[in-house]
Length: 378
Image (tube, rainbow, N blue to C red):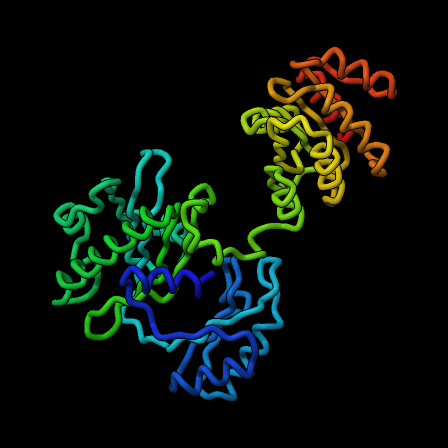
């Protein structure tokens, strides 16, 4: 969330306005009294569009801060309830910029993106002012090159008058700090929007969005406490606790597959045949039937699932163990939707015999199985 992103920015020397977090109107009032003067009270949720939803408001007195915080804490923004607000000292901007450092998949590297059109989304800036966006590829070991950076950022673009060159150098220093943060904390995106130019030529980050690559978290114990329950649905949390790799989606075909690559290929084929997957679920290489039972339980809790596809390519995973798990799940859980099964690989003949004795058909061919499950939801 924004208040957590601020903590990381401060750690890396990026200027931010003085601010405190509050989770009640009374706390917000007390923060305003400590800060004094005009403050901005901002909803803390993992969602954009907070201002349009009424989640960003001005307050000038402790009483006003309590009142607006109470209204904001009663909101739901982007499907998420607001539990905290950030009370920040108001800053008078001369000019607002956009600055981000991100992993760029197309160049397989790290890129800095700058625009003098801050305060709007970068997508809006790209659509309305494509010539006002600057891209700079960064050396993943050395970081931004000052000469290349300053050559890219025209001082006149900054709208800072005779302080243009000075602001450009400050912008470079902030970009270098963001690069260090990105590399050292395994971030995939750091976005300052707006990065405000205030009177006197100083730059201050008024809002920040930081995305940390989950794959880097095992190397960063200090970041684990920054996780938020709103990042994951209840089904995703349950799956993680069960040792399953799961991501909820918006379709109506539940998927239970072994292996991440096969899972993604299965989802692609479901879309190819005109339907939508309800999830990504990789049960991994384990042959534990209990995992299959748990996977069914998670899939069936998701609203809108009309059919389930089980796709197992047995290598380490034994198809007969999966078959036993399916039968166990049917005896323990009221499934209530059609199940289509494709099993091939280790002990697949034995697995099909087990399922046949239970009155369950299993396919060899993945295309046939997917056509069948798509027919159930058509």
